[in-house]
Length: 471
Image 1 (spheres, one colour):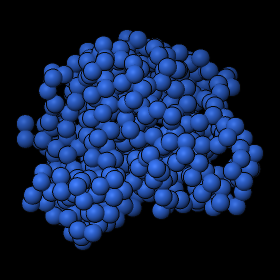
Image 2 (spheres, helix red, strand yellow):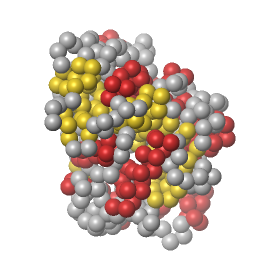
Image 3 (cartoon, one colour):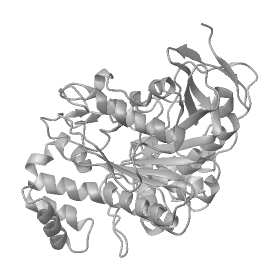
């Protein structure tokens, strides 16, 4: 079988035939963000005259390596870390071999706005192509180049990259057999929060038609005041002035080495929406959920959901599910509420038999993902012309001696139908040593494909779908 060749608006690319899919890797959608261009809006890539090789993965955005996560191996999620190279604003495409006007799905990876890439093993799109969907994954700028707020530079450059990738999809996806009039944008964690912001952005009108927000937040953006604190902390760590000109002179290696943990981002009007887990997020004057409540993105069909025990990921692999104390629970509550005693009492009433670790996890999970997901869904359902579907992922991983549970990221192998990925299995794998339910992957992956194809995931907007693995 000959290698497939597709001609894009920038030039021809040669992919490879791989079973159920034609695969094209590392196709540029914007020019390389180098030097001062790291702090500008994305611009078109220079056309190429030769047939570009799209059979091998390319470079990634500068980022730290984060495969170790306490007792858990998170390499399938975070990927290989930084693979240096200038031309990293790229997309990868998996298409059915005989695709014609097929539904398109565009995935935005997570990783706390500082890590992740199209090279992460979880994001192989073969199963989507097998089931008739053209899948696109994309890289975007991360960390300081992507999200540090600098006077004189456009804000949220990583978000602007995602919009540029969607424009590339509109111009080119028909050549891969996709329907540019049937595009579903979906993302997980930071990628889901970015998806919420795209939903709320007037610049995205017409670029996509459906959206899925997996464990993100419609309330996850920093205020300008919070962003200024991050900018000054980053400048201080680098020993430079907080200006575009100064940051443009710094090499990417130094950006990757800057650690901004422990920043206090609470202000008189805002809590830290990321609870100190990342110093980077979107910087917006109005939260995505607030923009949707005011009328943004209302014609887009939307799926929003979260996992039952999101917060376990930040406690169980580090041993904190068993070592957390009542004081730890209080401190966590104080980071998200003006009256931590009352908040803890409410959670204790809801979970009377919970350990301190379980209470702490519940508070973290709601603050990071649950509350912002609910607010986004409620805003869209109240005003939207497109339907709003909600879900809860409740299957419990047996990893970390059974403590990991239905935690953050554990739904991804089911969405991508990747239960066979070896690094996901065993005592350090995200899915744990027990055999994961294949029927759940069939069901959840099928729901995502159905939603992308028809706008109906298989349940009514009036009822929240629960994925338990006991179907």
